[in-house]
Length: 306
Image (cartoon, rainbow, N blue to C red; front, side, top):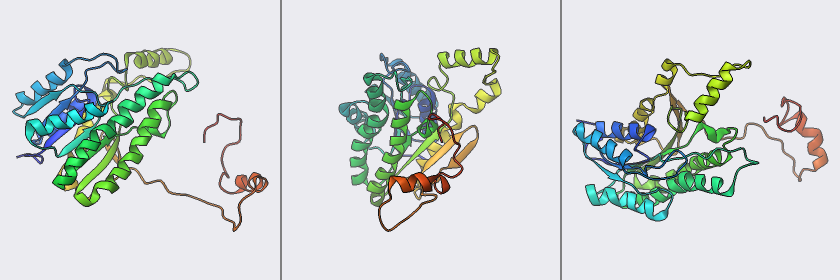
């Protein structure tokens, strides 16, 4: 008997990497799973049915139930079809794992409009497009679990302005969905996973890391043991746990997970402040800020991020 017996789950981007590991973990706990994957490249180009079909076959081989869906999360209709696949095939949906993602990395001064837009569409819009129809069903059902996928890149990562913006937007989205649905017995949480996948360890990135390590400045080359610790399978158990009834009291929270570590992020809070009855003048702030709010910040030219 699994902890998710009788439950129906949807996992987007489940044909490879993190989504595949999550789908297998849910299935191993008894859930029936919709394996959504467009089958595109890491940059979102192209499509293929093979990735989703292969995961469905894996789940069936282990005695579980699964069905493939090939819609894109980046459209309203695609999101509706993904959730409809669960309801039409298994009669309901209990769990939504928003995981599908792509990369279009570029320094912000070189980033194109298309590179910005497609990342927002797949990540941020994709979360909404799938959550919206699922939430309507969850509201009527008066139960449900939503697990979203943010990233440490949302805290700031050079060359990923588009991805960082989308991923941090997902954190705010998670908090508000949690508030909207709490009274209906639905929870919504998100993870910042640290895992070795085709997005985080692309051939180009590996080559760059190895080239840097071979140079005079040194660099980072991950050992086989380190790569093993970053396997997507380390992420999946937390996602499966958040999908269970045992996690009914966890809502609107963000977790780090990777390499055997699970961490709960604190919620943003003002850590210091200054106050006066009237409004501040620029002259006053020039004098006071270095002595109060920004005291201890390193001095230097623009570009020294705090």
